[in-house]
Amino acid sequence: MLALLERCVSDVGGDYVMEDTDSMAVVATEDGGLVPCPGGPHELQDGRRAVRALSFQQVDGIAGRFRQLSPYRDKSRSILKIEKDNYDPETGEQRQIFGFAISAKRYALFIPDADGNPVLLQKGVNNHENRWSEHGLGHLRNPFDFESEDRDWIRLDWRNIIRRELRMPTEPLSFEHLPAVGRVMLTSPKVMRTLRR
Image (tube, rainbow, N blue to C red; front, side, top):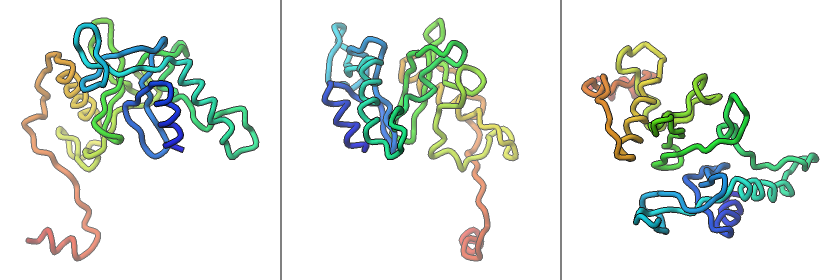
């Protein structure tokens, strides 16, 4: 299915930010066209590298093509859905979101504020759920309080990563000097022996 989706996107000249087992983040804007992207195969008039974005309508059309492949009796909906993140939670209008991806499981989605600063998609702030990954960080504890389940420090780190990539100033994070601490469960004598050394 993912190979079919890749083909559908490439056939119309599109590109994607990342993909995983059952999903793809397609580069799209309301009207389509070239958008800046370091390392992209195209070049903007100002010399920046770019990729070609599909229009929202083209992405809807691709999703519609997969309706016929639904294993369910109800063929009125596609098995590919446009995620809720793409719609403003207050107005319901489709909005432009931006993504920074290192790999399929290491990414963050954001929207720019009025001054162009990246604001990550965050539950209760501008989205229905947090949209930054914790891949590779999930085992680490909160650097301020090891017993706390608060994971906002990861959002702060992603914000700085994105700002650096956009060549925007960053502020030092208050936990940068603290050690990264993880919790290891002693689930067997073998693990205990390893730690004893």
